[in-house]
Length: 292
Image 1 (cartoon, one colour):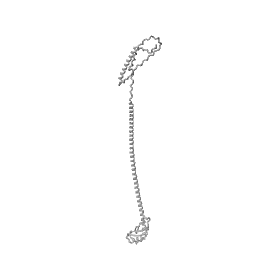
Image 2 (cartoon, helix red, strand yellow):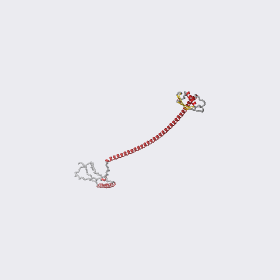
Image 3 (cartoon, helix red, strand yellow):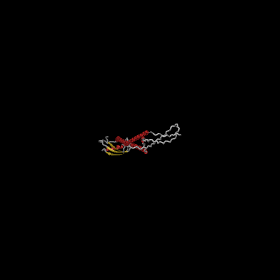
Image 4 (tube, rainbow, N blue to C red):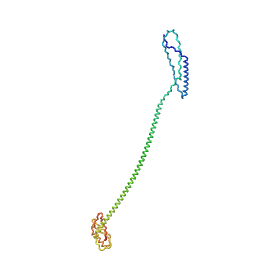
């Protein structure tokens, strides 16, 4: 007779059932307390968590092999005893799963846009500051150039004034020197002219004196002549000294003396020549006195 391996389980004692029931009640009470505390603690009610509970299958006991006694007479099989299902695990024992918020798919795009906008503003601010700095630098350079240009113009004006004043002084000095030189030349010319005139006068007097001396040497005076009368004659001569004409300009008051002087003039031809050719004149005015 084969050995039956599926022997029925013995029913659990009553004390074990009461213990399980007490534990279940305690867990429910603790769960309710935690739930009330969580509701008061949080501002918003937690999302409901659904948990499915399954009773673990009870493994069939493995019968130990034994030496079977001689089989008795077959008896009717006993009615199978209904095994009560295990007590459900209270939901309060299970910790609620942490709420995991799903990331917003637009958050990354929004963050990128915000970052790009911040970078754009930063670049725009940097460009604005750079432009302002360049503008200030350009203004400073423009002011420096205007200042240097004004200083250069002022320096050029001063130099032009100095050159103008120097040119005026030089012109005045040249004019003064020219006037001085002209005055010196005029003085020299006048001195030369005076000296030349004096020399000409002396040479002319000497020339006339030699003519008069020659004429006097040829005068045959008529007797005693009272006083010292003067006879003036105009004589026209040739370059060689030949006399071609004699005119009585003034009579001495003594006709005999006048005639004697005229004969002496004719006898003195040719007249002496001057030492310088420029002193020669065609017409001579001769003054003769008996006592000179």
